[in-house]
Length: 357
Image 1: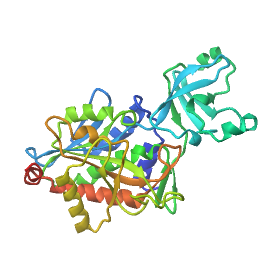
Image 2: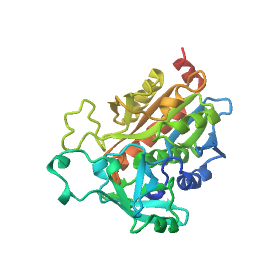
Image 3: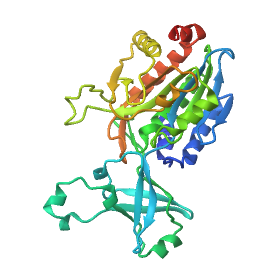
Image 4: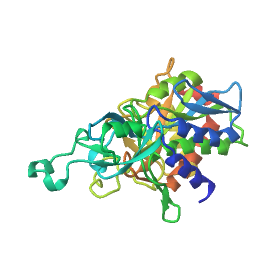
């Protein structure tokens, strides 16, 4: 693996469900510090590195989010099974028989997600979506007391177990938490590109916390940075797998950066969007667009910060998000890095003031 893929591997395999992002933040800081003048953290755990081009220039915030979808122990049954609560969105059928890691007070404990065996369910039950409340985690314990002896208590975080690997000679990345360690990696890589470059602004590049449970950390990080422009980088749904070909916004993995034209939390700033489209055209980078009827990104909080902050969300079409193993294109990642870097280099006060007219 080259350094870029190695960084993605380390970020992907780090554990950090909402509210428990410390391990991921450690990785983020490790990669950002060498290319940052200063590291800043908000009180919830969001982190950014600062790179000054012009001290009087616009303040540009570029972020992924540290947290991944996961679970929390809700209670322990008398026979030593764990019930759990989801942190972020899950499709229940993607979970059965999957391995998870409980981050206990005495260390990591491996468990298997189980449910009532299919051999004993009724035909009516077979045709229903299995609910998370009907699942449990088996850690091999035989009593609630044994579970507590293992150091596990309600409130402990639970993380998917999945190794990071590559496909097609490193052209595809596969792993857990690509939503949104890919955005974290992009924030780092843009800082790498800007390290020895001039730019007309002050860049704050890093990641928020608790995005998956309601874009909570975006508000605190925006308050810390007080940006004039914000770019949130996240993954989106690749509509190129069987059964999805007829989608209205058919974004495909490997076909270029994806720009969100609308979601439930934000209409992106028109001037900023035009600047990105113009830059992509000049760089000959293909652009894909999507409209998301439900959900949103950290940009949904950024754009309402203070008296308003022109914001946009962009990213990568990714397969199988919110599962143990997602797939994304390295080419999409690298093109998005190039595009975002060029956009930042164009964001001087003249350009920003044009947005505000």
